[in-house]
Image 1: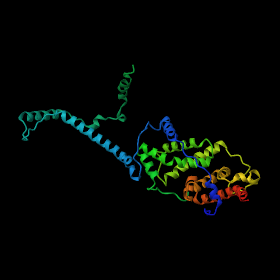
Image 2: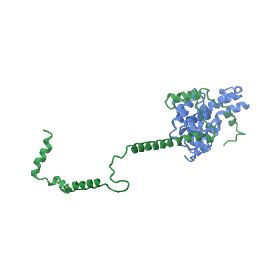
Image 3: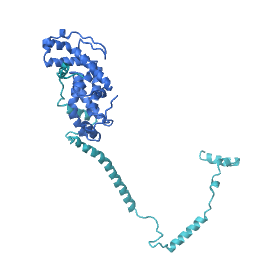
Image 4: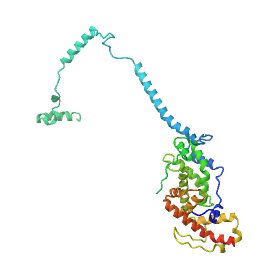
Length: 151
Length: 200
């Protein structure tokens, strides 16, 4: 590094003028940002970011957004719950508050048991013969079924 | 790059940029207000007295605005801005192929230069005031290779250290030091005849 106190080159370099920004620069920049769709009109918008601590509003904004989203979600869930609660109970209460079952309900239960017992339960294996078990005789009616809708 | 700078939490520019990233548009205006002088200054010295300074300055801030999403604090914001401005100036110079008229031929980096007798071309009496020195320095800087010119401008006018110059130019600190040395020697070689004439 050259010694600034002795080097004439430093003095020569200091003679070079600079160019201050034009007064219209900021306005022109703002107009261009808007023209290119990068920025909405924000004329007159003031920032209070004058010091190191002044960046807080921007940071607060970053926290507020997810908070608002969470609040909206909670409201939505609460509203949905209320809608469900207001719809009423469409089921039949068979047991009263004392825990006793009414005689008529016992009869219904018994009749339902009879109905269920009357059903003929079929084993799964019988419902799935599989194509490999199809005999030559079966092929005819299978073909009929397959071609029936096409005729 | 040898020396990568870490985030500087005390840098006001970084604070503004982060606020801008968080959605505070007004923080960008703060950045423009704070750094427009710096941008104009460096572009003026890199581009010379051309009409491109204002346009390139505007482009620098537009690029900064566009970098909003991908900006990651690494060192000072000014270094980031210098880098944008430098690359834009470099592109502009190369696009124009502009080499200001001069009889002096600077070689490429590290090459010997042919320096004609400047005193013969210019009346010594006319070179004594600062205005003329400004003009001479301007011509001398314009004759330097772009990276030498930039290194000297960043070091002398903007006070960047070797690490920062390296970061802006995309080279190592050692290479920046070498570049600065050559820039000074080349400029000194250009200006020396005028200096001698002034003393006669």
